[in-house]
Image (cartoon, rainbow, N blue to C red):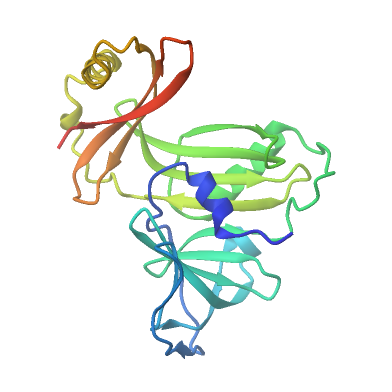
Length: 267
């Protein structure tokens, strides 16, 4: 069962891939000279001027052994260009600006009949080791659970500023038998220069009041009511400005619920 970049896009939820772990190319490499060709609308395309074959090492993917991979395609995910390479076993490696930011094992977790062989805690220990091997520093907050839809233990590692989560994250999936299925680095170091004073006076109550006001202005006299604020996260836009992304759960008059996202600018 061949996995694709689509699987990784689902894991992202929303946001961008950004710089992760640096890698070094080998001396032996060739360059593709094809013109840019659209493959799938605005999503998949082929770079005309990119390294056709690369050689690199990764402690997370291969215990430091040398990996040789061939360029497959590039993907525009949320205005960020990800170059995808594949090795002889069809494992995929994602690069952003010359940095390895993701890995997808084509064989791990491919069996739908795999039963739980390790515990959540054991899977977490394995994921911790993967994150440590990336050399990106501390990600103090970890959440995780067993994802039945993907038959993997899924973990999200996050950095926070003044108690607010950022989307500087590492996502790691471990199979029930303890094998790395995939990992993704998002926005590593993107908030290192964020001035914490931008968050002065901002509390969950502040954000909830803002979300309520926005929801009421969008749906006046519609019978839609505010239920709860969720997924509060500091992000950075394409313009380089920081903001807080808010997801709110709203309820329609007939009892159906839906989610709406708001942006709270902080500078």
